[in-house]
Length: 398
Image 1 (tube, rainbow, N blue to C red):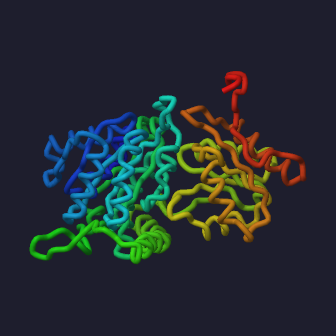
Image 2 (image 1 turned 180 degrees about the vertical axis):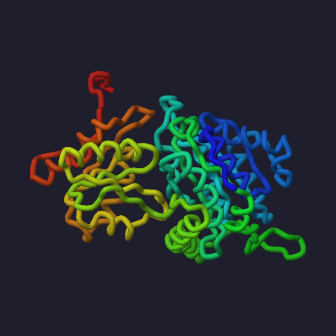
């Protein structure tokens, strides 16, 4: 039977990874990811993962290369990273997706230098959005753990065959202690069958992986990854439904809505700030303000159709990004506007907030929603702003 236990978020992710029976786990420490692979190392040392090879590598580049090689040889694999560690992996992440290897990796989201910051935002994963990995985003610890198990089933589906990145906010989820329902191994085994690769490196049946692609075929190879991303939308929803039937929780899928019935203004974001956002909406509803929440659970593939359906009756949409595309705007803001083009007349406002772990409070979300209502009334409101920017500390003449 499943066991409810108060544990650290990193341990919950490690328990989920263990239940998926990976044959290879690659590890390199970086804050705030370290506890995930540290907990797995203890499980391996204690004999709780007897069929798992735990490999300590010399760098994050090596950790990504290790799971690439393991998957290419037909072994289910797992790793985790954060921030600069993820940046060092990027070359290999492109290769893993291009080779159609369904690795799973936990990304403990953290800001990227410079300046150095160990606190949470989404710049590490968002900077990797175009490499072909499916990206799932967790609101809480239970969801992060559940997504690890679903990630394997999504990525290993022969309609998809893509790697999956499960994002959980650094410290806010990795280091928080919450009640988590752990996993009965028999139930996980029934939900997630053993990995059967479509192709694998085998001397008895030689294949070539990662060969040179001449210009005549390179476009087609990249299109195949794109097409698999689009097909993954259906698979992600199917797996979420299957998970709910098996475990009793719907903690996957493309998007989630909260109090969107009759909402004129929608707040939309990803990750752990959704919890605070829901609290803000509860208070605003009590005050008679028709506001709702749309949570993006899957960022890649981008759930255009699901978002259009969720936002079809809104008059203003406030998008909160914990990342920034330098010289432009928040990436979720850009993607949402593109997805709604010619499909919605709603006013769309963007807010860059929470970079480097800066707090975003209930009052902040209320203020953002009020700006949405002001825009509905035709009042002049900036389309995109760096929220709570302290201009007093900005230097002059730089």
